[in-house]
Length: 343
Picture 1 (cartoon, rainbow, N blue to C red):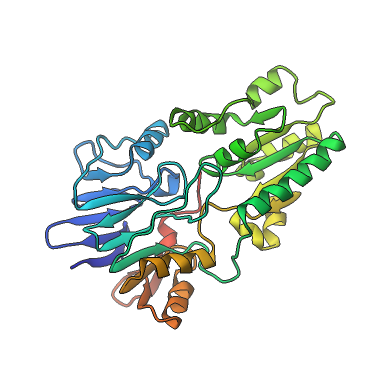
Picture 2 (picture 1 turned 90 degrees about the horizontal axis):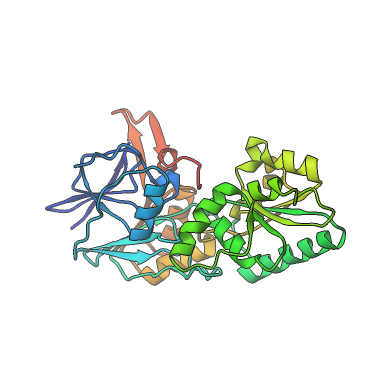
């Protein structure tokens, strides 16, 4: 029997003999901590050296360590099963005692070297709902690549360089892999650091030069076009505008949020194409149906609306909501505690 709840640390699952926090935002007092993947909104720096037992994949552990998070050794027990969640390299969902499944961030689409998530049958499902609204329906991965290649081809024909933007960890490695046929390919130095780790685990991330090398060798100032992959954060920190002004480059952003027309303008992009490391609305419904749980809990993003939609098609579903104070005057969705970053 599981007790599922949420507090100001995050989601907790309790059994008769143990307590597990799922992607907590700070150091909790529990037997176990599960870390689904190495995006910074799922990591916290305050883990004690001799504190909770950490459940995570070796790849997530390595990336987290590279990013300055010290978790010590990871813990394995037969009651816990890590299942590929298809989100980024090393990401996993957690199956507890073959009865409760926590998705973490999840994708069921094949994307370059990323395989679809493994979905188990479970009595209880805790599912992310980042895009749990029917407005968010994504095209096929191949369709998005085709549109991007057409834009790049036209720009190269005109001698105009192109910047592709995605999250530093996860999206940028997919972009590096699927657009490596364009030459010269230039990679922002922060993305290169993540690419090196992916390469260590057998993912093809070669045949490019870093941004610092390209600038040093005046590659960007040549009269020939080039392709650069940069962090989506560049839209906000001035780097994108600097590159566009200095070299006349055109920008293409990749995000699930781009199905909304305001996203392109808000980010200052020339083009924006739907590509996400999360499930879209229909994919989330498919995950729930395949898992076929008796009870569903939704968290993050459109948790309230997605729970209502699941209830309307016959599932017993509730959003995980943390409330402060006896009078419940302040009600906060769980995504308040995960923040906005996906780097």
